[in-house]
Image 1 (cartoon, protein in one colour):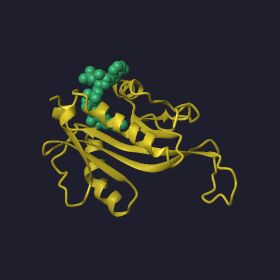
Image 2 (tube, protein in one colour):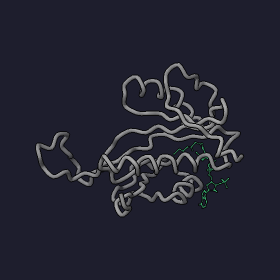
Image 3 (tube, rainbow, N blue to C red):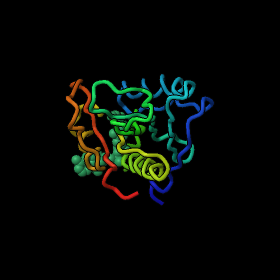
Image 4 (cartoon, rainbow, N blue to C red):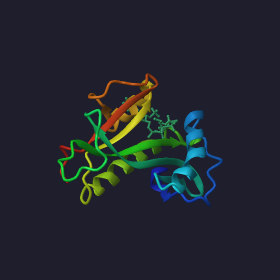
Length: 172
Ligand SMILES: CC(C)(COP(=O)(O)OP(=O)(O)OC[C@H]1O[C@@H](n2cnc3c(N)ncnc32)[C@H](O)[C@@H]1OP(=O)(O)O)[C@@H](O)C(=O)NCCC(=O)NCCS
């Protein structure tokens, strides 16, 4: 049985201890350990935890978002045509350091893509959006899975690269 066949996923609850997790990037570890319970409490994001047996080997945090090419976008439309693109944001992603390079990160990305693909049958969504740390190997990892740089947005932070997975030409 391969490592990927042994993966199970569950959604984060405050009673789950995530303090032992480390993906080797301090900023991602800090976001995961400090924000996961707050995002849960405020009901702003869902964190999905991936396990092999009882070992936490990866996570991804998702929330609803939208992309707009206009500088100001109304919150409530009053029946107007929406000029923004509905999206899901992959807010954060990590794999436990000792379990990296085994395909788990790719599995999690495939899981996110297929979850949003399923969601599209009931709720309109055009993109998965994320901000990748500006690291060529990491950008390559996302590109390998079908993400591309968001070409309509000037890069506003040299440490982060906006990327999207575009569902618009895929069949629902
Ligand atoms: C990024 C991260 C989630 C990837 O997890 P992982 O489990 O190691 O990923 P996988 O093993 O599924 O995929 C990596 C593989 O993608 C493939 N890949 C990546 N770039 C590729 C490219 N340009 N062309 C072809 N294949 C590529 C390779 O097969 C690569 O394997 P390798 O690095 O062992 O050679 C993990 O490294 C991590 O947690 N990093 C720290 C946190 C982080 O940076 N998170 C993202 C914040 S934006």
